[in-house]
Length: 84
Image (cartoon, rainbow, N blue to C red; front, side, top):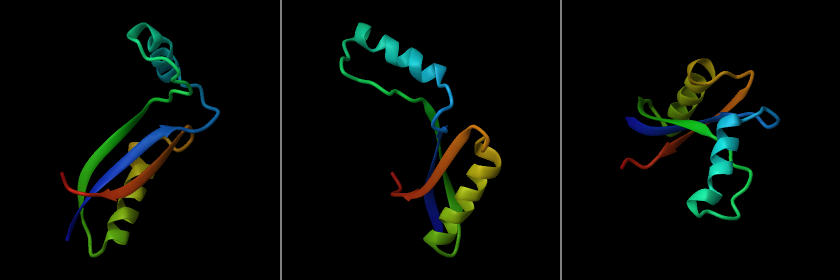
């Protein structure tokens, strides 16, 4: 069975995020007020062939931790999503 997966990768709390800070500083000039604590990250979408949703999620989380993120400075979260 195929499952659609979304993996979100972001910097761990306490790790400086210069990209997020740059975006946050630019927001008022673009007319966006009151937005704070901006953090940048990345997302990966793919399909996994697995026997169950739990197996697919486990495979995706393993992939996220071993290849898609740097576990020293980043955290990752994999979840099954509806196909679009």
